[in-house]
Length: 405
Ligand SMILES: [Zn+2]
Image 1 (cartoon, rainbow, N blue to C red):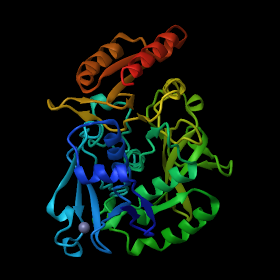
Image 2: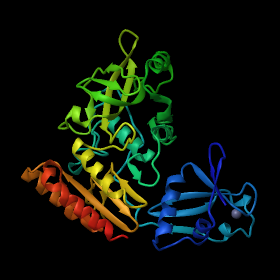
Image 3: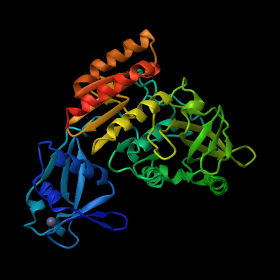
Image 4: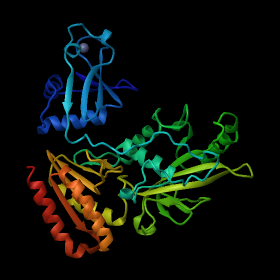
């Protein structure tokens, strides 16, 4: 059996062991099954599975409500005695059934030419103060989440180019709309540089006649940036400074702009009064490094992630997730761990404490109570007092990981 790429039909062989898992489905969570489920989840959007019963018989991998189903793409193409026609293969995964808060895929940017920095009730809540409240930010969070660059696998790191490709694919998702029937991809212009900017100017000058009426024509660029100020940024690739008309938004207003660099940035461009293109709004998310585009919320989190990586290095097959959207408990309470470290069946939540402020700690404590039942271990680390906390944190994390060996 093979995985077959939806776009270029390239195939990847499925080993006999994995094939056996595929034929049996599973309700339990052993190690190899979980790794395979993990793989199915990563591949499902871009790959089918080639069935063995007939040529051209394909299987779809779908994930729904915490289960993965293997289904015939078109039943007529399969032999009537095909195993997959007879049997519904279902995998249950306890790892990957987080229910995310409402994630809009429709982005009405520049509706009635209002400012892009509108409050967005879809993701803004008391519990998610750090999460962007701008529409551009909402797009960027959704894109990074869909591209899964917020997930780090210790035994399968991917290059910057591959990460950027995943991001581009997430922009090209037909379900993401900027208005009814207008996909977001029509407005996405990849990495920002002067050539792309000049092309976008011509595009925008002609866009008025087809762009949906209440919206002002715009395009979106992305860029890895090494520095941001109030309203300018420097691109990594060309080391060029670009000015933005409005203040650049970030994940939170209290982060140190210099220390939090580098960033992944989305910037919108429109046609200004003089019929020339201008960069209007930008949203910047701090990332781990210019090679690992994993989003983080502050330099504190970067430091903690570095420590986590140095500890988990000694183990095989560890997944680190930076959740970008809230999880919701059965009681409709929201929580969002700063990091999740997963090893075999062992789920470790890591909370990065950024201050000693009593209100802040009380709030964090409240969230911890909600989050704890969802994990095997909960570790809080005082990032602001790392000198005293460093050994303790390493000890706690190592101990928690030992349990899953
Ligand atoms: Zn078949």
